[in-house]
Length: 383
Ligand SMILES: *Cc1c(COP(=O)(O)O)cnc(C)c1O
Image (cartoon, rainbow, N blue to C red):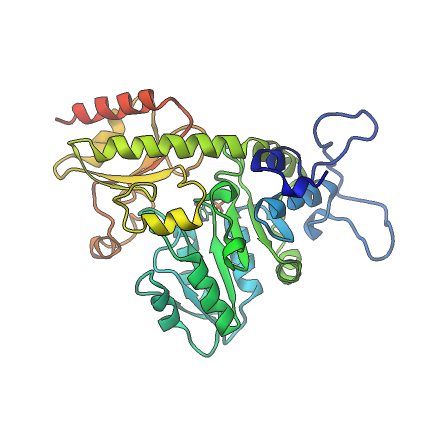
């Protein structure tokens, strides 16, 4: 049976799994060994070489989920982001980055790249010609994130893939927000796909991990650096992550449905002035999202109407947990102004479209009735 052509839930549950030849257990055995007998001179198994049995098995699953030839699993999303970028950039090179990026990635770029002699340009906007305009003779990488954090903007995958191919450079995406359940950028010509597996792949707010998927040739290039940087993930956590990914298809689909219902509810709410969700017809890039995503995801943002205090709103919640991070089965939310984007000046936040009343909402798998009741009672307490 050609498992690779199966549906998402069969891939999530079974693809790449290790057999237990002795006891015929239902799940992959866990090999914690850091020392393996030489099979031959060519194969030296060692965790930091990313080739232990559990690492190899899970890497196959993640590659299949992203429609790629190969993948590597890292100790965090940022280990994946930093290793992937530096694998394709050397002193004298230039990288074009999408204007709005995950905070950790933004910090990595502005705090580290210059020291390596790598220059960068953030695009002015998100239209294809904004990426083209930022290209230089020494540009080696285009880096995007769609849907983006926190305003859920959409970047055209196909257009960016074409621009990169034409320029003969590598296109890279952080596909964390969509997850492989909702978006497979390789199908649209993007070369390197990065995940913070801390988010939807882990899905239970208890694993910190990352992954990079790409062609074998690109993964070989990432591996060269990865083994020297040493950002591999412990086999125990690799095994836990495999277990988590088994339910990713059904989790994320439930979160897609809940987010759509919550976005519709919030858009109609008199005390909410704006909702950002690519699944809504009112989203400026709804059609582009529909063309390149198979589901609209579990992340949305909304603005309380002026005069309502975002911080008091969060304190009044009883079920939804105000907290950092996202993508767990439990609903969480945060105010970018008070947390992820607190270090930006008020002008810079305004420039990025982040209002003080903006709330970023990671929708979980609870019944939507319960989520709506909680938001309603929290808003009422402010009136
Ligand atoms: C969380 C996150 C990261 C960083 O991942 P860590 O596992 O925290 O290192 C990168 N990109 C996006 C979009 C994220 O949400």
